[in-house]
Length: 165
Picture 1 (cartoon, rainbow, N blue to C red):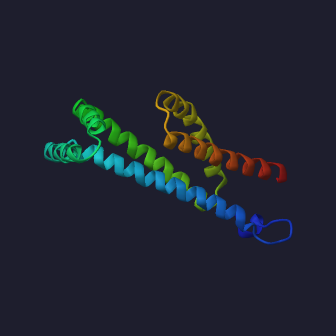
Picture 2 (spheres, rainbow, N blue to C red):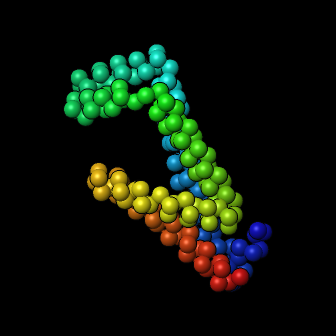
Picture 3 (cartoon, helix red, strand yellow):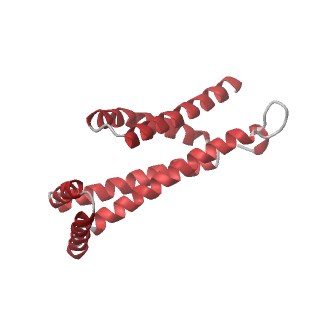
């Protein structure tokens, strides 16, 4: 799509829409970076020396802060098998790649990226709601609302473009 086709009714580029699309792209890049970090961390924990060091750090932290929550986290980590860590690492890398592709496509203003982002975002909403109902937390509610807002903005853009084509 060339610059001329992105111009508004008065011949000037619609910078607000482009900025909004770029903001969503940056959000996707942040999610990709976070998931990439999770993936690397999960795969690093497969190395026994790293896992022992992480366990020691968490144990030391438990002495200085909320002991019950950290002990629960340690118990969960101790029960995670190497196969589960590998699955978490690979799954996180795959999602990070998807978010990175969405981000690049949105940054470049590609219509296909808007469709992909709407579909992937809305397909995860039922899981987010289920998790939020089981573990109600402000961060989970905020993440759900932000994802719904992203999907709503993109659906509105796609409808507007479809009606003007």
